[in-house]
Amino acid sequence: DGAGAVILQNFDNFDKKLDDWGILSNVIHSDGNFYDLLKTNGGVSSNQMTGFIEMSGKDVFKHAIDKLSLSLEEALSLSNKEINELDWLVPHQANQRIILGVADKLKMNSKKIITTVKDHGNTSAASIPLALNEAVKDGRIKDDQVILLEAFGSGFTWGSVLLRY
Image 1 (cartoon, rainbow, N blue to C red):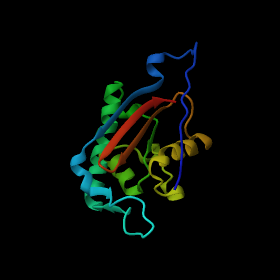
Image 2: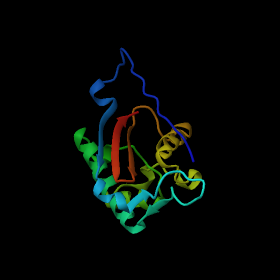
Image 3: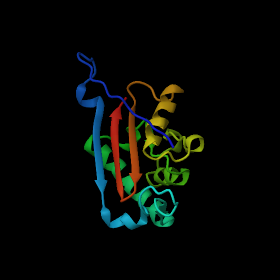
Image 4: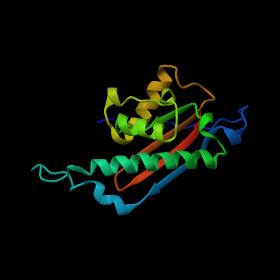
């Protein structure tokens, strides 16, 4: 399990063009028609009979790649940016195959993707701030870079945030 947060701060008199700094765009979607493909079978239980994750792996895999790719493209489009303007992709760290599947579908250089799933595992929603923190700490992510954060979850829900760091 993991936890993470990102703190946003407003700067007065900042010398950057404000229309191309900070959060540039964000998109979020949900579609309950897919609830049965990734869900829990109940609440927390002391008898171990409910509360387990149930997943149709192959279907979730295909949907995750498609929906993450589309939300990335949508966030870029809303900001009038092209994929080649993206310095880093920081995806939900569900598994490496999904991450590389998105990169392949978008013909994106996998060296521009922050991955920590091998170190942290799938920490669900915490995986994005954990990966972002790792890349800031090790110097890959620097000021003024364009970064896209994206996630996919049960139900299904998915979305992206494009920002200039």
